Image 1 (cartoon, rainbow, N blue to C red):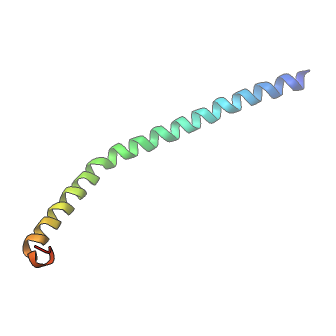
Image 2: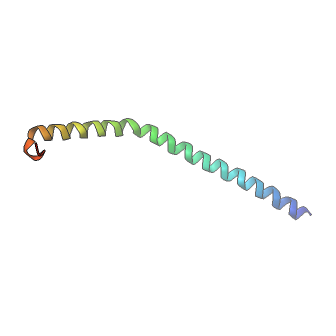
Image 3: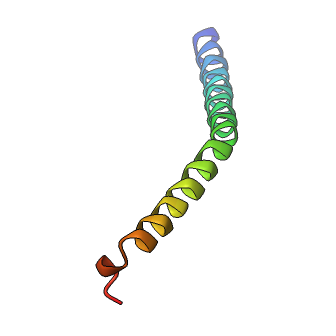
Length: 64
């Protein structure tokens, strides 16, 4: 009987621990995404500005 009770307790605490680990990993991942967002936006804006400047300088490549 003691073995059954100990097994159930360890089983339940294992799921609680696993839930905590997954939640912690997701929170850290979301923080990393929020930290990188400004860098990605700057990169996208600069690349679109570079594309526009390239097309102005090389209009013959644009097909117009």
